[in-house]
View 1 (cartoon, one colour):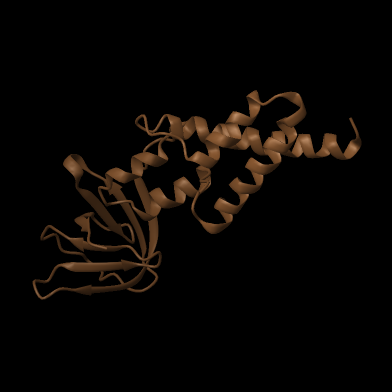
View 2 (cartoon, rainbow, N blue to C red; view 1 turned 90 degrees about the horizontal axis):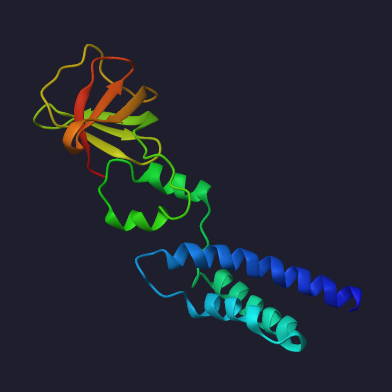
Length: 179
């Protein structure tokens, strides 16, 4: 077998291995079938020796095209963690898709910085974070120092789906995420 053919076979096998890992993760998703492009790539494993490389080349090219067009999305653990952080405070059952393979520990708290803070007509604090999250106070706790742009915030899970919002180390407010 020539050097070029070996290089193509190695590249095809690398793509196949990545697709296989993705396929296994997707197969664990509540019995849902694999995308056709992934299944075609996996099926190349059983192709006869003479056609296996051509099979991998075609399937890998199709897989690459679908990834480039956004029809298939490949997600790594770093992106999963980022999505979970952005969604902290929301109850989104669709996020269970991101919990395949090695299950990372559930996010219990986040830190942030206040971009804007103001009081609603009822005197409750609305806190907008630099990352775009918006939290609203749900209790009548008073703060000694008003939050302001640049204030440090810690938000942690509390009992029964509620959250505590600590601003600049003060007594915690109960809060809910509104955006």
